[in-house]
Structures are given as C-alpha cells and as structure tokens.
Image (tube, rainbow, N blue to C red; front, side, top):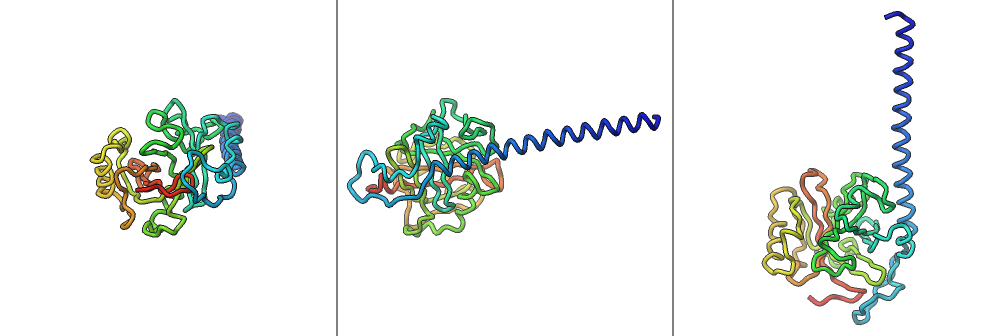
Length: 266
C-alpha cells in the first residue's frame, strides 16, 4: 500500500473513531440527563414526613399526613398510583402499575428507557390501592444504592428486633391513605413468582413461604426473633435482584403495622 493510501486509511479510521466516540458520549449524556430529570421530579413530589394520627382508623388519611404531591406525579404519568418511603436509606420513589405487568422494568416514570427502570407492581396480581393481602413490589438492585440497591445493603446492619428504630420500617402512600410496614424478614430467594406459587390467604401457604425463605440455601436469612409474621397479617414484599448473584432474588418482607397512623390489630 502506498504512503498516500495509508494516510487516507488512517484518517478514515480516526474519523470513524471520533464519530463512534461522539455517539457514545451523546448516549451517555442523554441517559444522565434523563436520570437527572427523574431525580428532580422525585424531589419535587416528596416533602417532609409528618406525625402519624393516633385517632381511630379512618377510611382515608388526613390530607396533611400525605406528604406526596400526587397531582404533580399524575401530570408526569397517570400510571403512578403510590409512593414508597424507605426510612433506612431515606429514599422515596413513585410506585407504578400498567396493564403490561412488566412495562416499567426498564422504563423510568416518564416512559423513557432507563437501566434503573421504576418501582412497580404487576396489575395481574396487585390492585393499585395497597389493599391486597400481599403486595409484591419490584425494583432494581443498583450498585449506586438507588432503587432497592440501598435497602438491600442496609439490611445486615438493621436490628430487626428494635421496634423503635425507624430504619426498620417503610411507608406506602396512595393519594388518600398510607400504610406503615415493619420489616420482619429478608433474604435470598429463587426467581419463582411468589404470588403464583403462594396463596397468602391460605394459612398453610403463608407459613410455607416463611419457612422456605428462612431455609433457602443461598445467602444469609434475616428475621426478627420477637416480631414474627402471623397468618392474617397484611404483607408488603420488596423484590430485587440479589447483589451477589442476579440469578437469585432478594426479598424484604414488611408487615403492615399501622393504617393511616393507627395500629393494626394482630
């Protein structure tokens, strides 16, 4: 190959490399811009927590006890029906649902592609008012500690026997009500669909699930020794990928202990 041809070839390779680099940088900037927009929206939607009511259980919460701007969230996406506040990590996220059960697996709250996805429940198994006997809430495990990555990494440091530790709780909000959930157990589990294989309105299935979670052969199970779930408890289970093996799930199980600020009888 002549020297002039070599120079032309190298110039072409260099230009092609610069174009590819520019495209990659553009994609990265777009993804970061989209995530920054979501972060700003979440900050706008949430506000400081308020004291829980101590009156008899009402059908709806006092509006002052709902620190989330759902009107604003519904302007962003009508699929947003709830909000989860994770006290151990001081993080809050919208909860979404769509007729396509896994619609938000890789979509942010604006409907844009995102590796972070969104926090969501499946419409085929859960209603959008947090009234089911067991609510299965999905979120990605992210190494930067967002979504359900932070709460998974916080579990080993929690003393689940300490009822007074706010970190042992998470809160679920709708526009008209809220549930306080105390974490009672956590651990690695298989990828079987929990709500398909376990009927939490059946006592035997309810007890079988917790026995299976406690005896799962991978990872370390965590459980409170003095706050064990009992049949009839309403559950909220956070489901994410296990940080050490994405072929496994990591579950964080909460028992609803208060509705609209009033303790639930067990």
